[in-house]
Length: 66
Image (cartoon, rainbow, N blue to C red):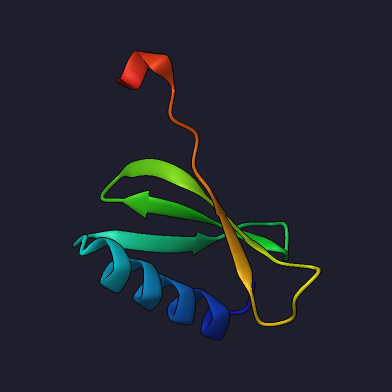
């Protein structure tokens, strides 16, 4: 993901979840970025290959965390 895409998606997720400290960080893979709240990794955002300009957010919820 480009820096402009990361900023756009980060702003959207921050507004949507109302969460302070949400940050999206680039990965080596150019089609995705990691999502953090503070220092806690919470998921991955992927570029949607089927719909240009769209993204997919994937977050696992482990039973240990519940």
